[in-house]
Image (spheres, rainbow, N blue to C red):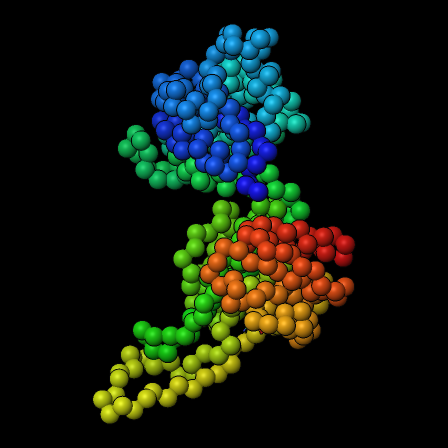
Length: 405
Ligand code: C5P
C-alpha cells in the first residue's frame, strides 16, 4: 500500500515563482498513490502552464469559475466534494489574504470557501519573499487562518528567487509530501513526548580507529517518524548514521555509548515514552589512546582492555518516573534465533513493560523487518513489512497500552 493510496487531492496553485516546484509535487503525490486534480489561479498560469500540470496529473486542469466543461457549471462544488484534502501549494500572500476574508472571486478561492469545512481539510504551503512573509499583515492573516481551522505548513529558509535570503521559500516537494502523509495518520500519540535512541554507537580506540556495529538506524528513525506522524513531540538521539532527520523531529547526534547515555538522561525527564532501538556497544576501550596507535615493526600487537558500557535502557527503566508509570519504556532485542525465548528473558532483565524482538542479521541495513512484541500479556507478531509500516503499527500498539493503563 502506498502512503496516499485511495486519497484524492485537489492541488491548488496560486501565483508565485514556487509554481515550478508544484510540478514535482504533483508527480510525487501521484507516485505516492494519490489521484490529483489541479486547480490554478490566473496568476499561477503566468508561472507554469496548465498543459504541464495536465500532463503530470493526467487530468484536465481547471482555472476559471466560468469553465463550461462541468455539466452543472459548478466546478467549485463538484471539485471540492470529491476531495479528501485541498492542498494549496504555493499559497501566495495575496491568496492567503483573500482566503482569510472569505473572498471568492476566482475558482480556487471559491472552491476553498465552498468546501465542506468538516470533511475536506485545507492545507496551505506558503511561498513568498521574506519581507512579505514577515509583514505583520501576513503573520496576522496566518494566525487567523489557523484559528479558522486551516492547516498552514512551515516555510523553508534560504536563498529566494528575488536574490534575498530568509524565511518564506515554499517547502521542497518531498517535505510537503512527508507533511501530507503525516497529516492523514491518526493522532494516537497527541500530547505525548517520545524519546527514541537509534543507530549504532562508535567506541574510539584512538583518534582514527574505533569499534562499531552494523545497525543502520532505519528502524529507530522510522519509529521517530511514526511517533511524530501520530502527533507526539519527538526527540531522536542518533548514533553515527547518515539518515535524513524525519520532519518535525528534534535530533541529537551522539557518537559513543556514554554520549548517548548523557543525551538520554538530559531529555528523559520531559518524555512520557522511551523507545530504545539503538544498538549500543556492550563494551568500550578502557584507555583510549591520545594519539594514533602505530603498527609495531616487530609485529607486536596492541593490547586493548575493555570496560562494560552502562545499560541505558535498564537504567532508565529503573528510574522513579518509569516505575510509577509516568514514563513508558520499550526495549528492542536483535537476536539470531529463539526470538520469543530471548525477548521474554530480555524483557524481564531490562525491567520494561514492552520488549520488541527482531532477527538482527535478517534486517540490518534493510528497509524491511518483522517484529515480535512481548509484554506481560504474551507475544504478538507484526509480520514482515517495511520498517515504516511496522513503526506505525508499533506506535499504535504503544498508544493502545498507554490509553489502557
Ligand atoms: O542487552 P541488549 O543489548 O541485547 O539489549 C538491547 C536493548 O537494550 C535495546 O533496546 C538497546 O537499545 C538497549 N541497550 C541500552 N544500553 C546498552 C545496551 C542495550 O540502552 N548499553
